Image (cartoon, rainbow, N blue to C red; front, side, top):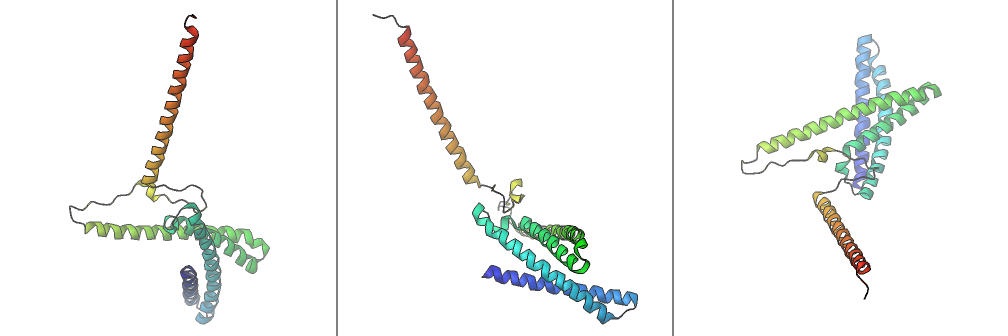
Length: 215
């Protein structure tokens, strides 16, 4: 329920921002071209609103599907946030660009529209994700400055910054899981060594028996 509410909120906010940006751009162009401001603002606002609504509906559909797959691979949404957002925005851009280009320009505009809008949306998502990471790093640094000298500074390994796609069968393991794997492997090797020693002892005994003089 919370996820559905969040998706609806994102769609409404995204559509509103798109329409407002379109209306502002249209009004600016009207002023520069000495044209009717209301007509320009209304036309561009409606067109951008349609694009925004279509884009964010498709994007939320993709991203919700990707997040539903995370539990199957033992992943959390926070671990795949960036890659999920990038994949969803790119696919939404391709789909929206193709659909709207087909409506406004006909079948010939589907491929160019899909490519252009897909690249634009992918680039925009990369910028947004980078800005979010920068903001988060800034907040973390500010909190680290508040630590007392006797408090250890939390550190991360380089692998902690690598995002694994939700559709990947590979997942990151914790230190405890890694140690358990090493212990299991060590026990397996010890058993193999013992088995080899038994076989060598048995072979040696048979050899001694065959070489000893018969009575």
